Length: 289
Image (cartoon, rainbow, N blue to C red):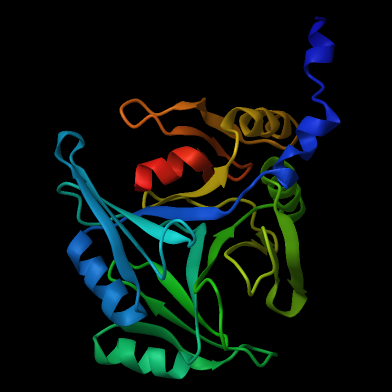
């Protein structure tokens, strides 16, 4: 086959991400004291500790927490590296968000338990949705959003990007996400796009924020990645490679099984350097059980 023709993927392949069975599985990040964070998330946010594992030969432990079982909910995967008590969050990571029926009450509960409230509960600027912001013990920010009911309380991961249109295009083409909402706020000098696999109130979304004139951010070493499910890591990986050639980014792990666990994954960086891991659906369920 001529080199040129190999570089042009079929229309069917490029459509694959939109047909694939995808959802957000977990957000992975590092914490300085696993038990302290578990206590804060369960007592202040009402999350459940779903599972915990210790890998002494690799010198780290994980804890998985969320508002429902991993089979159907987005969860946080906390990593504690032996002996490392603090991390640099950097300027690029924004926040996670939790939807709750009563933000005012949650803020009072968090304050009563010694939590750090960085923005009091109240309507957003120029709107009616009640929000608040709190910081966890490691300095990660959580936005609390008032919603009457929601199938997925852990509802947002906010990341800052240097070119919003490029990022939207990347997540649409490489990951099959839909642009569910786009807002431009010139009075506050920022724009943002919500990307996901269903409407904002039904699922977890990636909130990409562009601050006017800011094209680069520091990544720090605290936040790691989001994991998303796929029915075929090889096909998905092929699409990602093609999109990266056009829009930028980098494949950090070619599709294939993880030694020892055999779960098939592929991982890559978007044009801003934010990492995503695609995980085989069946392998993920096997790993849980």
